Amino acid sequence: RAKESGRNTQCFYDANIQRLITDQLELQRDLRLAIAEDQLQLYYQLQVDRYKQVAGVEALVRWHHPQRGMVMPGVFIHVAEQSDDIICLGDWILDRACRQLLEWQNHPQRFQWSIAVNVSVRQLRADDFADKVIETLQRTGARPDRLLLEITESMLLIDTEQVIQKMARLKKVGVRFSLDDFGTGYSSLGYLNRLPIDELKIDQSFVSDMTDDEHHQVLIRTILSLGKTLSLTTIAEGVETEQQFTILKALGCDRFQGYWFGRPVPAHELPEY
Ligand code: C2E
Ligand code: MG
Ligand code: MG
Ligand code: MG
Image (tube, rainbow, N blue to C red; front, side, top):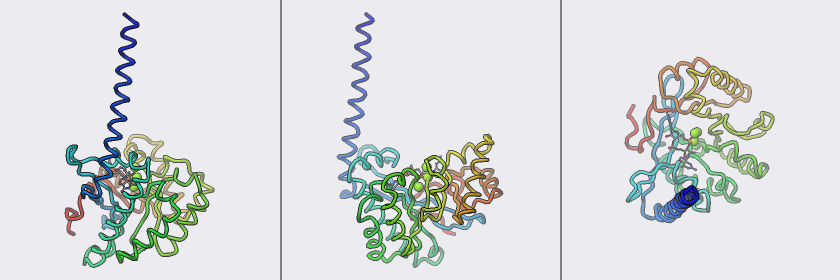
């Protein structure tokens, strides 16, 4: 009997894995159609300064799947990242964000807004990454100094020299870089100041635990003073309450992003100020 149930457990386990694989393959297949079928959309989330003035937005991709409904990037980005699909997806996202920038450049209240675009490691490691970004800026007419590229610490562990060279080329034309999810990765401090970055983005996990976990507040304090020392802008993500905003402001954080100021929405749903 024990043997039998053991085998059943085994089967059950295999069936789960099987379903997972089928699911991923299905997602991958559907994703390849998504761009052509116009199922992707960029949502934008406000980023504000200490006076709650909008400084810019972060672009966050959404997928309107014909059967599944809205699929979040947490579900499909890692699937796309397993192949060059992420390159196609990334090209599309960059193109849309730059076109949005151009539209805002001619808008009386939004001409100074920047757009932060998340970049995946495979994009950054492609030889033509810098050329492609420059070409997209030129083709769309978006101002390079309005574009922020968000990268994560782990992306800088491999091919560091080549990556820094590409970043430096983009910085020369005015593009800026933000280090996303900062504090969760592996940056050694010595190597941070070699990177051509402009902004540190404090991970939302520190922000969410900040009010009841003193260690996290100490960590945030350390990141903020590090930012100051290196002359980097600091931004906190995942700000959900007024209390978090007040504390972060008191600690000297420059910028804020989170549900407290607004959820990610399509461009036409952004508030009119
Ligand atoms: P991320 O870049 O760290 O983006 C922040 C995530 O936190 C977003 O989730 C955003 O909706 C969410 N968020 C914002 N404010 C709050 C808040 O106050 N509380 C909480 N709990 N969450 C908040 P989203 O849109 O699901 O994106 C998840 C991740 O997917 C992103 O993390 C990013 O790594 C990736 N991603 C999203 N869009 C793109 C894209 O266009 N390209 C690439 N390569 N990756 C993307
Ligand atoms: Mg991001
Ligand atoms: Mg982040
Ligand atoms: Mg995050």
